[in-house]
Image (cartoon, rainbow, N blue to C red):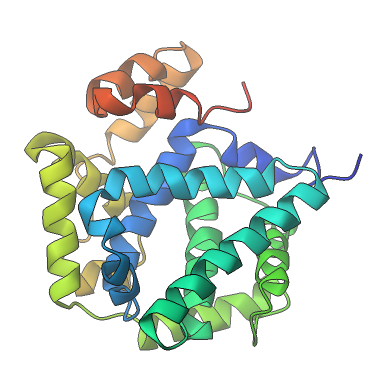
Length: 253
């Protein structure tokens, strides 16, 4: 049986643990709020109305690609393409290729950053594997000008950070929605978590401080994982309404 992502791939290990995935999307939530194309999600109204629900919807799509048979993964990618084309038709013009690339770039960056925060440094070959999975996803979506390897991606990634991000009214509103949906305490935890993984450019645009207050707690959290207490901690700090969805994020035990 052929899978889209090999069963022994580091990408499956990264995306198989709920806490790693949550850090991926904490970072992505910060950076995507700055993206110049974020107005597309305001066109549908789904992101500002339910940002946490959209998080789990996106996670499910990603897992349907990463943990699926090759044919099923390709069908999921095609379905994602179909959804976006329908939105483009309703709005009357196309989502630019650079906006699609930016989303793939976020998934690459935060997959690496989250795993290295909670586990260990990735090897060059493992980073190349992360890039390759999302490169093939983008290629199936028929995106243009995709960097063909991790080294080329690093250059393109820096260009994206310089050219495609800005703090707008949508940025401000999205963070208001994050706070409204999470509550003040959990929102503060979200921001401190974002500080652990976002690039300096993102911190500057969001007027974040450079260092996270959670930095000293990371080694302690790693210890709780060894003692199997991490689930208990996540139940405390994350919304109870999403306990079932959070538990289902764990694929690799």
